[in-house]
Every structure is written in C-alpha cells, then in structure tokens.
Image (cartoon, rainbow, N blue to C red):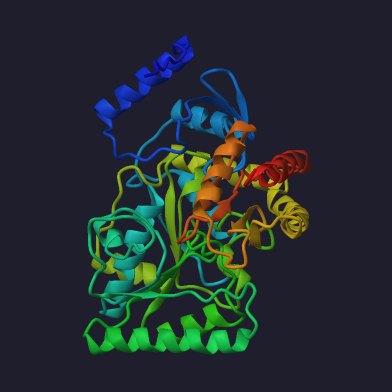
Length: 438
C-alpha cells in the first residue's frame, strides 16, 4: 500500500480554484472554457494577453479584438462618446450616420443599406426573417457542420455544435466539397452541385420552398475548406432560381481578414443579397449588422417597425468607426495579405517535415493545419490536436482547433499581428509539432 502526496496549492492556484468554484456557482458548469486547466486572463495589449500569475501569451486565436487588445484609439472613441451622449436611433445623431456611411463604403455597388444589431446571432436571425418575408418560403440551406448563432431559429439549423433542438424540417444541410488534395476537381464540383439540386427539390416537395442559403465564406467551423472553383457561384444561382436569397455570414471572414478583399464573399464572383457581421466590428463592443439592398430594406421596413434599443447607438458607432480608422491608417488588410502569404509558405514547409500534418488550411490571417495519424491510414488525430493546443499554451501561444473531427488547428490572431509575431508563433508551433508522439 502506498500513500500518495501532492504539493499544496500556491496562493495563485488557490485563487484560481476559488474563482472557478464561484463561476460554477453562478454561470453553471456548462458554460464552455478553453484548456484542461482554465486560463484566467486579466489584461491585454495589442496581440499580448496576461494571466493572473503575470505570464504573457501571444494571442493567435481571438478575432474579436480585431485591431488589438485594449486598442487606445477605440477605447478613447468609446470613452469620449460615453461622456457626450448615448441614445438609440429614434433620435438623429451624426455619429450613427457617419458609421453607416463608412461601413457601406467598403461594399460593392448594390449593397447600400444597413440594419444595425447587437451581435452576429441577431444579425443572422434578422437576415433569415427578411428572407422569409421576401420569398414567402421557409426552407433554408446550410452546411453540414456550421454555426451561425444561438437564437431558436439558428439553433434549428445548427449542425456544428451540440444543441437540444433537432434540425428543423425546413432545413437541408449541404456537405461542402473540399478541393484540397482532390484529384478530379470538376467531378467533385458536379457531384456537389447535384446534391444542391436534390436538397432544393426536397425542400420544394415538402412545401417549404427555398428562402435562403446561409454560409460562411471561409467555411471556418467546417475546418477551413477550399471549395472547387464555381461551387459557391453555382449554389447561389440555383438558390436564386428557386426564389431564395443568399446570406453571407462574415462574422469570421470579414473586415479584411482574408487579406485580398474586405469581405470573404468577395473571394467569389457573385454578390450576396444580405451580408451579416458581428464579432470584430467594434473590437469587443457588442455590435452586429445586416447589410443589404435598398429594395430589401424598404420592403421589410414597410411591413415591420424594426427597432432596437441598443443597436446603432452613438457609442457603438464610435467604436465601429474607430476600428475602420485603425484598419485604414495601419493598412491592416494589406498586412493580412502579406503576412498570410508568408505564414502559408512557412506552414507548407512545416507540413512537409511533419508526419502528423496532412494539409495546410486557410487564407490571410485565418490559417491552420489538418492533423492526422502518422500511419498510412491518415485518420483524423483529434487527441494529438488537443495535445498540441495545450502544449502551445505552455509555450506561451494561444490557438484552438476546429473541424468536424476537431483535428484542424485554428489560428486567427488580431489583425495587428506583425512578421515578428508570426515568426514567434511559427517557431513554437514547429517545436510543438516536433514534440508530438515522443
């Protein structure tokens, strides 16, 4: 018989345990947290985060602080506006109009009206509502591993997270073709579009019709898939022929993250009917939006008194304007393009030297690696991926993972990332990959 002993907790560890217990006693045990041992963060600056013990971490994950943690331009703009006036949009206020004008100026012709909301969930809910009223149909096409928000409507079409609601009878989930590593891209495209045709026919036969196709242009939850050329355009054409609208969810892919364009849908040769956005709009201040056409906004507005107490406030607008200002002054979209190419090349070199990496994923400053077992079967290596994320935390870099099998590393840093930061992340990622399986 042996007696096992453990070292007593330090004061810092005890404080963390107490905080976790208090969280469980208030927020419950089902609110998700990262890491086996939760990380208590107390401050941030640019691309750096500091925990309760004073250790700093390079943030390779968070897209909410789009122009950097605690950005002084955004903080000063919010503070100044709070000290001036903050009311809803039933009164005229120049700041709100200035923000709407600046935001719409980033879109292509035709997308010239905006509804302001509080979150991406709320934006997607509103976009689906607009689509239903415009088309008179209820059927929705989504992808088979996606997440677009947490309202009841959105829960019924969620395929990528655990939800209590069953998939709605009015929903059809499309399996998105991945052209990475495909031998016959044209055959893959034809098969995938045939599945779209079948899904549309199914909705019509069931009496739902087609109201909308809702998609993330980067297919980020799905594992950063690369669709074959012509797929998105083909889906959009089929949806519109069926009388439906196309909704691009830009919460993940928007605001210059892909580098080559301001919006993810601009990677393709079509313009959506509605564009939704949220997280990075105001650097952490709760702002969302639906950008659409004059026709759709007027049609909806004539039927509905749409009003939102907090959306479009002068403070929210000041925060959003400050984000656009910093993006322009620091050329962050161009930086995302340049850094994305640099990081992508380094990741491909890294992949060639690792038996655990199957493919490199992503575009601009949203990138990852698909990890598989090092044997000939190349099975998805979820456990190894989780271990690598934990190891990177120990090395002082925060990343995450995504994909249907949780085996794609997710790296999506604030846009103020520099070459120096990228080198640090890549150096430590290479070391962590080298340590796998030892």
